[in-house]
Length: 310
Length: 310
Image (tube, rainbow over all chains, first blue to last red; front, side, top):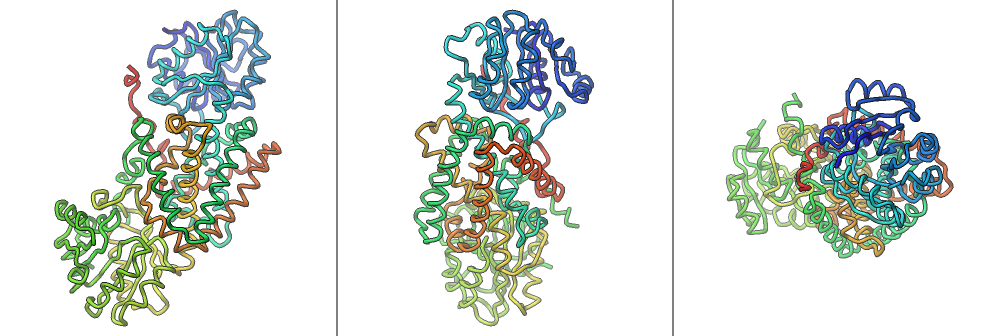
């Protein structure tokens, strides 16, 4: 199933990847790219990843059958308000936000009865942002979570589901509240502690920034990838999923206190037990095709050759 | 400069990588592999990465010019005690432990005056363990930190430095105490919080283990790599670098409390400021060749094709 006219609002990493994927896999006859930033629209035109590219949201969504909002969750309510009067009856609205309850609350009031909102969240991404960073296979073999309201228009849900399956994603459905709890632990708190430790390391007086950088291969550098993610997007996520993030952070802190106590009192058995248990989870992730089994994410063997030493 | 006879005690990831590298880059005329585990010795023989492989440490170190201890730091004192009487005068002893002050205290008392101890720590590794996981280029373009005591035998230090430079590493010297502080933030605390969040996620009741695995691409999966590291090695690190780890963990916790407070009170500006600042550190790491600039560590574009969806 392909849509006649697909409009994408916000051509960053996710939006531009949807545009590329929709083109590559033939999921839409016409692809419209909408972004308020003129420079983004110019890049989109240069990249040739849409049939029409415009800064005019009203014009862009007119005649669209499916509109995907790919803007930071803090801006999504305002965008919904702007486009709502220009949607044709029957047009379906969706999004890609990493938070769902707050997005539903922000978008739904603006839409007419004739425009179903089917919230979606593709759990995929990289640390890069902007229209140049997207690629058609970003969603391949990744999960996309839909959180349609009770009694949602089935044809509307199907239209969104078909797009994501066409992009290679595995679609799962749950409530917005459960989504927000699950993502708090699998995504939001991991980002928070990554941002935090990079900040801590940068602020030390006893250890120089140059030392932190040189010796980062000991583990620290992994965290810097996540901590290089888009600041606006992540600010909005923490502000709009506050309750679930603080709840999960509370659990994390309790466990960290226990671990810290085990170190202080030399409880090697407790440490060894945890460190053994955590290995199983990674095996599950690799087995489910959500991670490479290659050592060091495949980075290790591609290191610069010894000859760079001169 | 190459050593006549190099003995490696402990043929795990690091020990077997040294053996492979020494052979590949011609850094030793004879390479002796010593491991108390008969199965490891059998694998080393099958892999053909040493000239002699034995479970008998006394026999193995006899006639060696350079002996590298590659065992978990908790076992290093006992190994030093075992081999000490069998070392020839002038033989230099080194190690690869991730902790230095405790290793110096554990090893030095056992060695004769004629056997200099030059502690070393190559800041490199993967999440895999055992003799099969090693490879010759593991240390290429990575730092190796030496912590020789004041007034150390210069020829002994030079012998160890030459080995590491031959393996492609960049050698730097500091005190054991400073090493332990630097590694606490660039390696030990990152591992601790990775182990911790994987444990927290595994123990939740509201979110199933299957959900944690499926939606791990949101960031969580990165942490599972580090949390799959060798449990014995890491237990020993935390037990022997307790003070520095708890000190750095205290800083991390203070910063996390402030961040948590910013979320609770909706201080978007503080969040955005931190999230912007942390990007710079990664750029420094990439610029120094300690990290790939490829999106998602280069994993993203090698994802399974959309066709796996069927």
